[in-house]
Length: 227
Image (tube, helix red, strand yellow):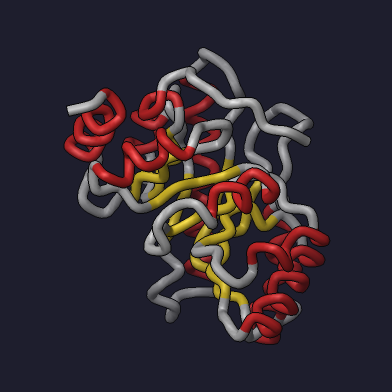
């Protein structure tokens, strides 16, 4: 068994049944992706639209692609026809653009609302107040071609796991507030995407239903991506 396949096997053995493993394939080669695919894995995450498009046409069609990086509104049209889940919806304007392109593609696109939970200013995401105001305005009912399925957040990049844990606890509380306040009757509002290679074990302890793992699957190998 190759190293990538073995890493996936060990991770899936560790994850609870209700937790999805997103293999973060940014900067990884088609060969790397296919090694994971041949090991039975089907969910992959990319940060950049250009890189995703460069891979999408060269791999099997049953792969479920997640957009996990900051998404510019003018790039939505390129992925609207096939993206499985956009995890990084960080503004109402972006949500409206996804709805527009979803309608054009004849699809309803699943999305997660990204929240700013880290202390780092470079991270993107809603504040709780912004999300609450948006949902109270009726956007989630108005936009027929998007389906909000939960929340996503990126913890501070640090070795201080107490800080990371507190940020994950906060994201879980955001999910519960939104579920209780707005999505009680929506069974598929159920996802909390948090946790990466360095902190996924803490994320699992705090209720993650989706972990985004790159290095722990593929290692540090990378390919050059042209801009």
